[in-house]
Length: 287
Image (cartoon, rainbow, N blue to C red; front, side, top):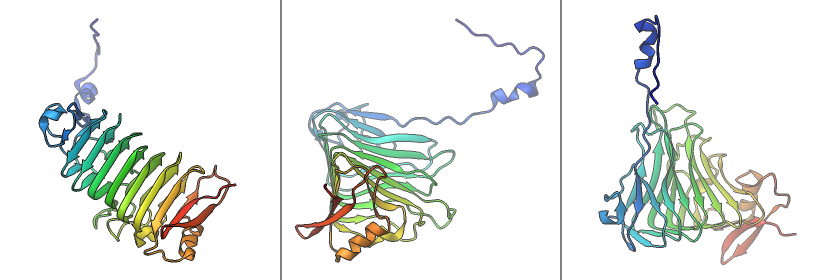
């Protein structure tokens, strides 16, 4: 059926708005893993048959082991407004990155493209270098990770830098939802990769459904922003971290008192502090 529009008596000026270019935001290209166990850098393992680049949305949803050297997803103003899952691991997929993994977003005109990650149940991501993630120079938006499998990295770097030219209200950051999975940072968890970060920028960890975060060294920049906190959404999560920078029980008690360790409103029992293998363990007190 053909639809005809008639504008009887309308002037060109009145109709000119129809000809104005409206901004269109293209979705990033999807890359599906179609190979068996293999190398990320081998184009024949992907559909379409090319190696994903920094603008891709990667989906590995089968029980395979994929090895990669360095993986970077980033957005710097290509007009891809909206929220996209840059990396999806599902169906028992395992991705091992020998170098660094970066999932980074930055404010851009006309809209910010927010890049997220999903690590499904029975899936694993292992990063031999630094896992960097977050949104830079944006207001009220964050990169969101959902972790139901396991994520292991040597270093974690939260990206939420505020540039010297950005307005003071611009912050950004990241949210790590550990939903029944486990995040292990073998060495250093750096809440903010720039000490000049706006004090309202977000570095948030939500623990639920038995989720656990285990950190070798929790950086002292934890308290640099009131929005850097670990939230116990239910009564099942655990936080384990080393005593470097937080040597005394009173240091951990202070983190609770000041809201850097906090309970969801639905949780009625208090947090308790314990020790395990020379590390602090924080969890909800059992009845």
